[in-house]
Image (cartoon, rainbow, N blue to C red; front, side, top):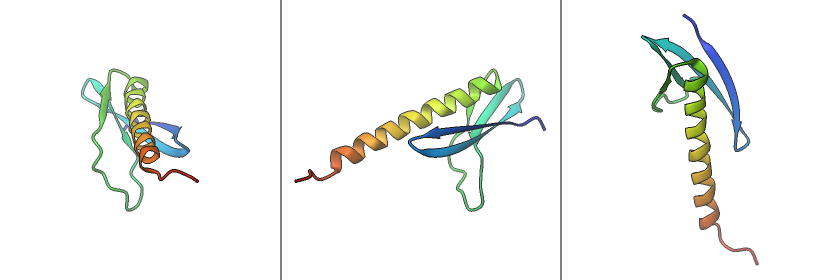
Length: 78
């Protein structure tokens, strides 16, 4: 099987992305490690780069949203 691998660092955390062909398009998903849940939906693109980019963009948005929520709920420093 033709597998493309990408590594992206988002919010200080490394993400390992695998992209595989599915019919006439490419599916990107996080590489599963031992004990890692597989509940995240895949992202599809016309090329391996596009599929990986779409997943990376979603991860960046998710991290930004999490960081903003964490900052908003942090108690003020004195």
